[in-house]
Length: 126
View 1 (tube, rainbow, N blue to C red):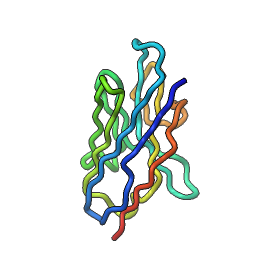
View 2: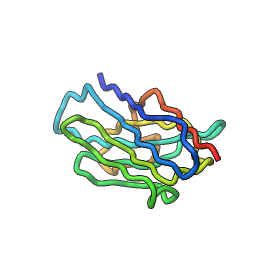
View 3: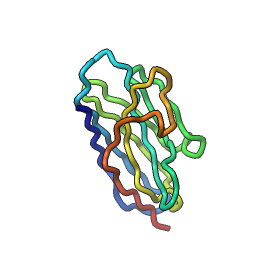
View 4: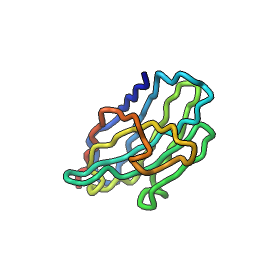
């Protein structure tokens, strides 16, 4: 079965940087179109898309992070990375990695993702 495991969450000061990692395992068909995305969830809010990448290297970013976050993929390891710089206190949230097998994208809607990691906390202090 497909499993998603993310890591890298931490506490940083405003303006700081973090790199999150996410590994997807258990994909049965190596020819599958797979997208891996990062989402974040604030208390009482729905999960929102941050960035996504597919196995062809296509990327999608939320407008709010486009100039500060970079998503990349190591296909050999089925691992993707989210490099975040210039972090803001309002970006404190639980960050989730998801895996999607939809034919389009890479998507940034949570409903397009069927597999999720357990989440990793990112705290940005002012």
